[in-house]
Length: 503
Image (tube, rainbow, N blue to C red; front, top):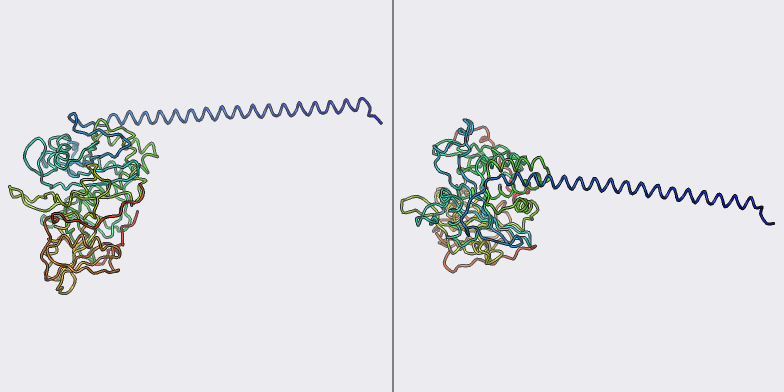
């Protein structure tokens, strides 16, 4: 039977209603999506605008930082995609001193004299492989000061301005400098506080103690061991300490290398501070603003160093892997100037491999350098002076000298103990000795690569690396008395690690 006309009409009407309802729902959903897209687009635009305004604000503030003046051609030009040399200088200038508290903490210009470079550190960047190489110049390095024709310690070159210091380095070492960054004592302290402090590993309690004057010159006195958070005041004292001591087995022991090992501490502190500036400061606008505020008052830059260049350098320190960072001290030899002052002279043979990296002649030193070798000097009773002299000379040559210690008995022959896989480093140490040394492998060393034990046959340390001498090749890097204190009554030294832990 054929359906009635009304039924057909009803079904048609029902279909029409459903179709119209579906079309209306689709149109409503589409309209809501368009509204949400407009909202998302507006929020994204506002976020981008906020970011641009924030970056613009930081850029404007950054432009307020003091700019050092240089004669034309003093700073070398370089494409930002190519390796560049950054000269980082910590100055002992007291120009900022304006209060009684600051005068008590740092002294005044009338008390300490003209400004000198307290820290001179070169950082070479390799953008293509995310590598960094650092080289420190000891402040007592004796050389010709640019524009004067006279020889003096390198730290005095800053008295003639940043231009004179840069020209002194370029003239004496053939190293082009692309950028310049200078910070004073107050600035460094404030920068560390602005990033929330710096975390370092300390295997033992430390202090700064001048035995002759019986004073603590910098105020460095830290009881904690292990990973320790340093505030700005402590970090500055750690970097400035020239009479560094560690509490080992209840006895305060002086750093055998004195001011020379200060370079190593400064490198570590600089690396940590830059890395934490990027990690904590760049992601936090308030901290970044505080960092720039500190820089405006206490930092000086060359006029070609852009905000994004400095941010990029800090980020590179934050993301770099251990095998992508090389730290070196300039190999030197101790000596005396014509005026009778104790100074350091460049060890030209030993220095060439690392200088060539900063000259752009190579990307990594072709030999194992002394700065890659951490050692301890041991001695028989009564031979402490010889061990102290050996430690100082080896540190001057660039070796990382941890400490000197007595063996507890007589030693006939000089020996060099070395940890597994460090025979080449032991050979580098042996090459710097005047007399024979027996190389002895051992797996019992902690915290050092090599232990040099001075025997009755000890002859001393060579003043310079022998002409034509070469060390074993390095594999190319992968990837692109003071008053006693209660602390002295107990052994408080933490066990020395095989390598410094990462904090």
